[in-house]
Image (tube, rainbow, N blue to C red; front, side, top):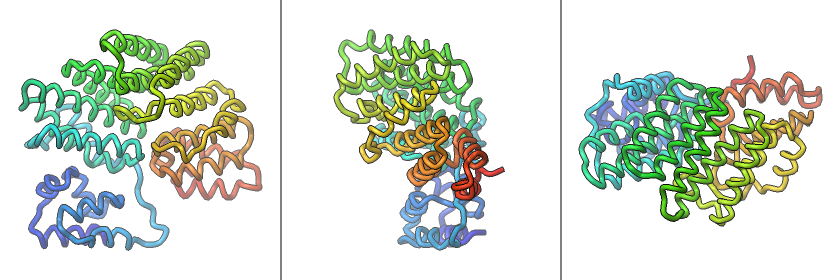
Length: 398
């Protein structure tokens, strides 16, 4: 058992709190808590603080967490136990159950926190809390009526959206597709056109990840058009979802090497961003003029226009990007463009910066790990050793 696991077990015993009770107090799944107590998982700082609060441990657990050996790696990514629990929840074979939904306001705050965790690239943390959140939202949809029921369904659509996104980050396309479908079903049941368009974003992303590129492009364009028809007048929120959906379609078109469609959809999204005026992160889209420029970088490098991508990237101040996931993506796209141009040192520095900003976005994604491996294999002697050490440190080396 790790020092943290032993300390957690000690405080649970001292407070007379079992796994299920700590799950109720903290929101973390019973399986995740058990793994922490047995030393098979290591918590993030946020998890340690949350458990401190739940047990009234006065910071003892956070202090225990910081007592790990120097250089000891913190496991990153979605643990097998969390993946299994999500699979059970998504397929209806869940042994958990018994969740009390609480109030709609509390549920909305929990979903907002999950969306924030996703944008901060805290994917392992999300793996521990999403099963319980989905159970509460499902219970709310069954228990509430009227406006509260419709709001709960829209929140459930958001929770399934986040779930699908986390699963895509970790390459679990099958469960991601199931979660995306659940998101759309909940959104349709909510009768909220903005929620439906929001779920269309993750449907588009899942189709693209599965290689169904043309369908992804058409789905994004059609759903964006439907949103414009279904709302009498765009609000900042609906306009953000509309633009973000167009951007997702533009990326799918770029992956299909359809330059015309990619830039047509990107242009429409940029027009919407201009109408919006600022990147306000409505509906957790991070959409706005800056976000559209970030997607222009991504599309350029995807289409093989590395020089254009690097010129665009240099014109963007990373400090202006408030969403961690988007800042890390810009750095990863910069590294991709540098590799295309044979600028290995630039790629190495960009990947190091991306890992510093968002460790799980780099060490938890197979595509980025493959990029790191490629860099370590092709780098010139001047940086080969550094690149190889970096690859080994984040688990990319074979």
